[in-house]
Image 1 (spheres, rainbow, N blue to C red):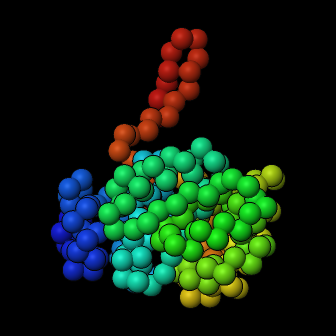
Image 2 (spheres, rainbow, N blue to C red):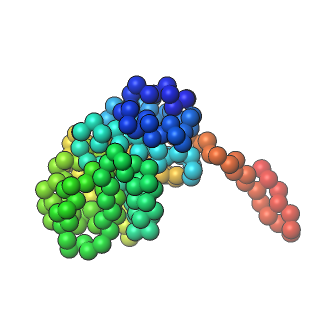
Length: 220
């Protein structure tokens, strides 16, 4: 799918940024658009690493922000990943959205975040913001959960599960997008999120599998 084929469905400011770097959408991105990504539908996207999952999230978040529907939250499991995503988003979208990173003191409600459009955070920090009854939470229109398969992690999983449970009750009209390269029970998780499932095996570099034995690799 060519990027220009969706020109009329995304804000011109967003299209102007994307067309400088992208001409053709990847298979998972095309599937997500066809399943309602740009219409506020909940999606669970399960595709390989480097297949274009982040752009799927960006399309939803920036469309919502530019059209004035509300804030976007991008939730990641690690502070290092949060910092990386913050730098990427700020480089690309700072001219159309105010972007913030919050990964610090979990005892702070960070009231200054009320002035920002796209907030990158960890699940632990966002859980803390909810517990502080942060007033701007009700203005969130898009929720992205990166590495959502960590719901099954014995350390981070419970916090993320409680967080999503609260958000589903608190923000009934918000769009939820889950991203992962690997989920064992994708259909079950999609049902829990009330989301459409997007699955694709395309990757930029083909993955070859094989067995190494006595100095030789036998591919299969």
